[in-house]
Image (cartoon, rainbow, N blue to C red):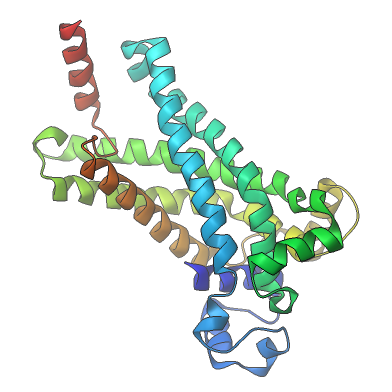
Length: 295
């Protein structure tokens, strides 16, 4: 997803140079003069700039997000009992996802700052190894976290919607099928996972897009002041419509990314003998009735 991310970030921060996604891809790949002056390399190397902090940052954040979410969902459900866990499942999903993302973003924030700076100013550094110490040397360690507020504003709604929507969409799809999840093949269940993941990604991309603009802008510029003053300056600069710049490539990127994440995640769960993500309401009730019968 790095090439799409580079074009999306540059569309948000430099709309005059990158008015459309197609032109952004084309200009970087061909090495046009307008992007060459900004330091972008020609060809695929230019479109892969910032892949290092992208991989590391989102791997750490993803581990926190999925791991803590599953752990909290299990623990909260156990504490409130099976019946309440079904009745208030949206609140269980929401609180688990919110907490998991809050923690994951703290780990992601410094790497996101480096990623955005490199993607918008390729001359800043070759990659993460030289970019991180240079950033700290020039702007201070604390400034690595200057985007944490917008990052939370972007990622927490994004993740809450991503997980709640996934759970509910998969539940809806299973309710419309002729047989329960437990009777479906692995391939059929993975089809439900992919469809639910993609749709949940589209929903959360739209909901979190304005905050994504702020993250790109704040990490792209050097300005004094707190997060609110920086955000106010950005709003005055781009206006309301500017907060929706790059929405189409980001929706495609996030939809694809979310579907891939859920697909890979569920594949690994299946390989190690765990249930594939997503349940129908009937499956949840039946599983709990079986547990109560065993007890």
